[in-house]
Length: 148
Ligand SMILES: [Zn+2]
Image (tube, rainbow, N blue to C red; front, side, top):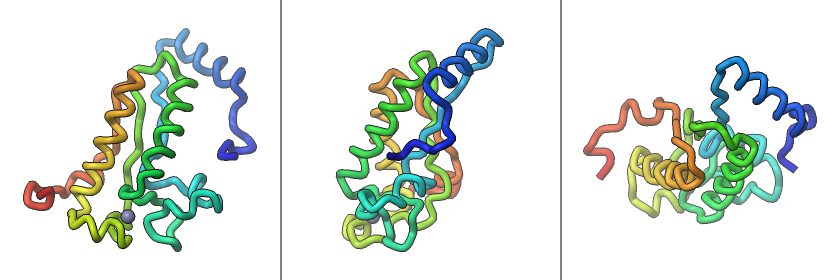
């Protein structure tokens, strides 16, 4: 359901990965895990996982099904890239972080919510045998006092 109609076939992907390997290029797969999930959250089955009903890009980190969904996405991409050392988890431009009632009730800063969720996501990437990578923009202004 989430596959783009023009995505590579499994055979095309394997050809691409083989060509990259033969030319000493490391392919780093990227799976969005927090923001930029429009292609997932636009589907009626996943609307309830949005941070805000009218914003299609971001998951709510406080809903347990959010992490389950991200785990499934990461498992799929990890299986497609068995020889990749790294797994990029995205995590950039999460503009509405902490704005839903569930997140507000948690009483955490946006930085603390972000770090808590991304730590759980990164832990799973490590369990898959990958070294996680994320974008830095959501952390560049985090200060210790905001994390408490
Ligand atoms: Zn939320």
